[in-house]
Image (cartoon, rainbow, N blue to C red; front, side, top):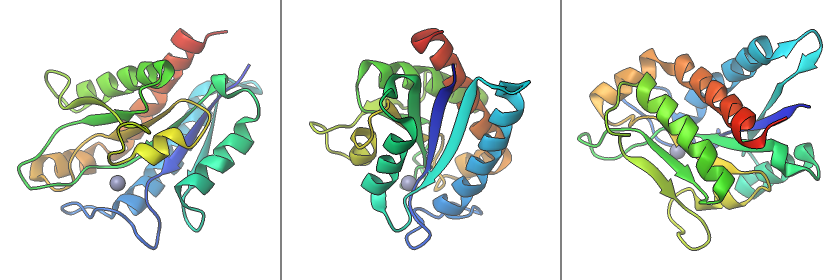
Length: 198
Ligand SMILES: [Zn+2]
C-alpha cells in the first residue's frame, strides 16, 4: 500500500515569509525545493508501477492554512494514519541566532516523524547536540506554526533547517537546498516504514 506525504509550502506569493541573506523569500525557495522533493520521491520510491511513497505539494495561496490542510484531508481520505504532512519553512531572527528546529503538534506520530526528520537534518547540516531541538506547538501551546500543526488529520510537522538571517546558516540553505528536501523525503519514508508499517 502507498504512503502519502503532503508537502505544504510555507507562506504565500502575496506574503512570502522571511527573506534570508542572498536567498529567495521562504515561499519561492520552498516552491522549488518542493518540486524537487516530488521528483526525487517519484524516482526513489516508485518501481514498476508500484508507488511506495506518493508525494503531493500543497499551497496556502488564496485559501490560507486551513484551506491548504483541508485539501490535504480530501487527498488523504478517511485513512489519515498512512499519511503525514510536512510544512517547509526556514527560520529568521537576529544575525546571531542559528541552528535547526523542528516543530511538532506533540501527537505520538508527529513526534516520531519529527525525531527522524530532525536528526536527519542535524546530521546533514553538521549540527551537534540535536541543535535547537523539537518544539511542540498546538492548541495549548499556541506559538508560531501551531495552526498548521493541528489543521489537518494526518500527523504534521514543520521543518526549519536553518536561519536565513545568519550568514553561515544562510550559506547552508543555499548550498544544501535540494539535499535538505531529499533528506526530509528519506526520513519520512523511514518514519512510514518503522512506525506505520506494512
Ligand atoms: Zn516561515
